[in-house]
Amino acid sequence: AQSVTQLDSHVSVSEGTPVLLRCNYSSSYSPSLFWYVQHPNKGLQLLLKYTSAATLVKGINGFEAEFKKSETSFHLTKPSAHMSDAAEYFCVVSGYSGTYKYIFGTGTRLKVLA
Amino acid sequence: NAGVTQTPKFRILKIGQSMTLQCAQDMNHNYMYWYRQDPGMGLKLIYYSVGAGITDKGEVPNGYNVSRSTTEDFPLRLELAAPSQTSVYFCASRGTGAHTEAFFGQGTRLTVV
Image (cartoon, rainbow over all chains, first blue to last red; front, side):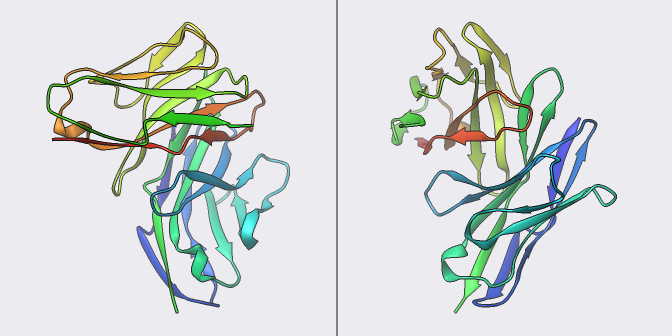
């Protein structure tokens, strides 16, 4: 079985300060992990993905995430927040268990303060 | 390359009405999915398909039906709409490869009144 827990439903940061969005996962299989972003009233855009090639994954718009197997975590970070980063972020786990499904966390809404 | 296309973008239904949400992809993907998104709940899987003629239930299939007669299309049917089906619906597809991501449509916002 697979599951994802996003530890914060809301995060507020000031523009120019670091962003940390936390995600823990559970998987019986070697997981693939993803972060998607959803801007208001928009679809979902892939930020980055972990595929077992490297534990530190770089994505678009300056975001990166580190896969830590011992902690079952895949936290998303960005050194300096921009106003345009305000959105909802989803951590997603997938893996083969007879078929491929994507299991979503409940989301973290990021607010960026001027 | 259009990717995953959903129609309509918005719809208001009355209780008891039926409708079909359309989803088409032009990437020749075998896997297709329907999710619903409710505030604070993330996305929940309704139905999925691993290829033409093959569909299976996800976490929340009650009140919905699907079919997959072609690789490109994966419509979602709502019979006897209920207020609990008010949600945003996303269709997605996936290509081959162990670690590939899902590609999402722009969503359909459905309100049942």
